[in-house]
Image 1 (cartoon, rainbow, N blue to C red):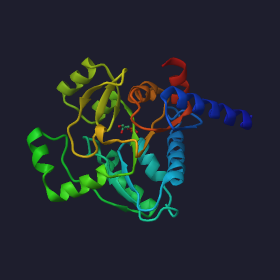
Image 2 (cartoon, rainbow, N blue to C red):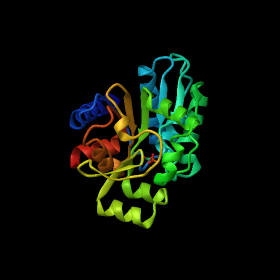
Image 3 (tube, rainbow, N blue to C red):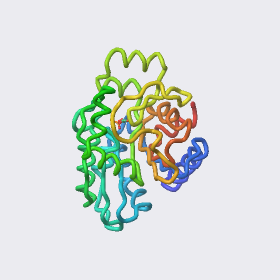
Amino acid sequence: DFIKEVSGIRVLEKQLREKLNLDHVVVVPGDSDELPWVKQEMGRACVHYLKSILVSDSIIAITGGTTMAAVAEMMTPLTGSPNCLFVPARGGLGERVENQANTICAEMAKKAKGDYRLLYVPDPLSEKTYQSITSEPSIIEILNLIKGSDTVIHGIGNALTMAERRKASPEQVEKIKQGQAVGEAFGYYFNQQGEIVHKVRTVGLQLEDLSDSQHVIAVAGGESKAQAIASYFKPAKSNVLITDEGAAQKLLREI
Ligand code: G3H
């Protein structure tokens, strides 16, 4: 039975890799919507994958969310790749402190025995504040580290769930609904075709900063996120997906 399960998972990974046109896919057994420990298993799988690609002196940019918190929880010392630096990919996006990239970044670095730098900016930002904040030397310094990161690890969320959790204004929620957004990553909201329908203005990594020379790892699972994951990968923006069986089955069956 165990062999059958493992080979079933391998088939899912291969099918997803082909469907979403990715370099690497890891599917962990179970559905994190139903079993909370499945999220930790995704975290463990992410740490395992990270160790296979990291080199010393890497800069790793990470986002927030409960899945990223699980990655931090499962992190172990990165002994094979010394001097790694962790940075938050973007500002807080209105999340509670435990879900913010800054908090998770510090925790992850501590467990990895690496270093970290934080990004202290209020957000979302008005155009005027955005311009002045991005001309502050200390902010420019950290932004350069973020934009020069060689590895990015991020979550993907359901559009409306994320808008609500981040206390988006009624106007923003309306825009997200009108645009029929289904997925969210990095503060960008995507419709089913993968088009951006809304974007939170904050400093840090912008979608256009992601490049082929980076390892960009998405970690997201649960049957309820299948549509969100598919929307984010429409124009492939990351090359690796760590997910669970719940999301994988649904994505392959219905989307
Ligand atoms: O941007 C996506 C969200 O951070 C995902 O949050 O992992 O708590 O579902 P979550």
